[in-house]
Amino acid sequence: MTTNETTDQTLTNRQGHPVTDNQNIRTIGNRGPSTLENYHFIEKISHFDRERVPERVVHGRGAGAHGYFEAYGKLGDEPIAKYTRARLFQEAGKQTPVFVRFSSVIHGGHSPETLRDPRGFATKFYTEDGNWDLVGNNLKIFFIRDAMKFPDMVHAFKPDPVTNVQSMERFFDFVSQSPEATHMITFLFSPWGIPANYRQMQGSGVNTYKWVNKEGKAVLVKYHWEPLQGIRNLTQAEAEQLQGKNFNHATQDLYEAIERGEYPAWELQVQWMSDDAHDELDFDPLDDTKLWDPEQFPMLPVGKMVLNKNPENYFAEVEQAAFGTGVLVDGLDFSDDKMLQGRTFSYSDTQRYRVGTNYLQLPINAPKKQVATNQRDGQMAFRIDIATGQNPHVNYEPSTMGGLREADRPGEPHEPAYSAKLIREPIDRQNNFKQAGETYRKFEQWERDELIDNLVGALSTCSSVIRDTMIKHFTEADADYGKRIADGLKQADLHDTESRHVGTDPANEGLELAEELGH
Ligand code: HEM
Image (cartoon, rainbow, N blue to C red; front, side, top):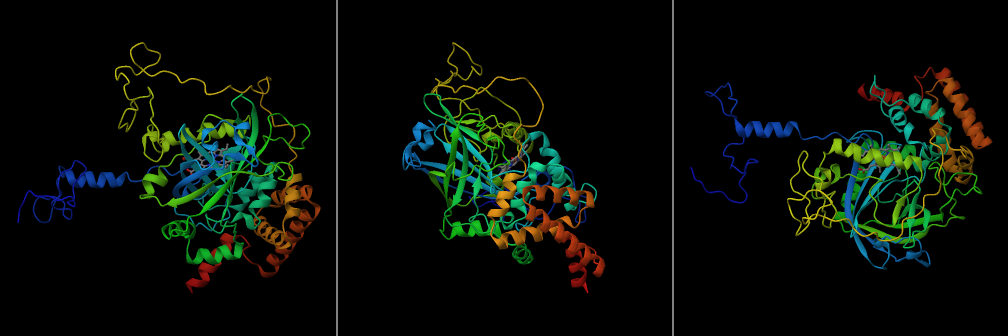
């Protein structure tokens, strides 16, 4: 039967034309060949050919959810206005919509969620003053303190460019030449290196930021998310067992908990110190490889976040989400932390490439307030961000003809701390090992045992040059730490020679298992 009638369930192409045959390509005769003017087929297949955008260069695997942030109106017991004029924090009970993306760092989009790897914890606050992105990780510190080293670090951690397999030898080759990584490695190879899921995971801004109050007075701050569900991590053995059954468990856990109405929540806590160089400390407060001792700089609650809505579409909302450390609102500022400046360039740069010039027009990235700019055009621009009543002929500023005008300054600017020579050099107060030793000693016995086992397993695949340097670093952190790694490696070598084993490289173990299972 032929009819022109369509319903709202009728399949159309992207021009809105009803599709009458979605199974058969148009051909000359029953057996082909097909013709090139097949509009529906060509549109369908060529759109399919373009379904993927480039994956994030790091943090490729992730899951996201929507929710809200509720302010306490205070920093600990004090009115928060004393420290920051950022409006989202001022009033107790004030809610700001958020979108969060959790991720793992090194491997690609469908890699197992059980790997020993930092986890990303990126939050977009859609505030009344525009967006604020807090782009953090689960661990409170990082491997390196200078943005110049980031591409090398990521290359060393990602799969080998020849074999396409991650190699602990390449990983520790870089780490052994970067002593500032010792502290992060101590966390990463401990049970804190594999969070059990996203809901029971901490978050941290890692880098140091500033808060600025109405009078323009600034303080240095660090942000931390504390999960109200408690914290849970996996041992290596637990992770391996889980990976054999389900390598998407963290995404699934988050999605299903929200569908069940069990909304995960985190408290946002802030540490602060006055805005100066703090020469009395044995570390630099702008050094992201260091913890700020919570005894000295308490974790003060400022609000709570609840995630209560799953994305309707993974690609549109999670894959295309774009977070960056440059996305701040008034009252929140950068510190002079040189990693932070490097990061701030990198995020929006990669997003212009990964998602496109107009990535900020996508609903997931656009602020939930009016955007009025004179930026125009570019690939995929689908609207102009124009103010109500703005003269559409005026896409420049200043103008006398009804264009946009600059805003008033909301408060005093804060004074930069210094003037100095333009140089390239490492920071003075490096103190690369002390906190790594403190962290090692703070671990419980079983956590130290796990750490040693995991490190010995990974280092036993490395050359003696790399091992010796790593043992030296661990010994500088703590004599027992270094000795246990050295002893463990000797034992592993002995075992290796005795059994003529291929090695304790997890990749080799997996190969053996695969071979065994194949027989
Ligand atoms: C993602 C660069 C350090 C947390 C990314 C991306 C880049 C990048 C290019 C991909 C962004 C995208 O495609 O949308 C850098 C550079 C760093 C650095 C150059 C150092 C200089 C850090 C640190 C943290 C961090 C210290 C933790 C605080 C994240 C997170 C994501 C990410 C959570 C994923 C964001 C999302 O879910 O979309 N980073 N990063 N990065 N980075 Fe960094």
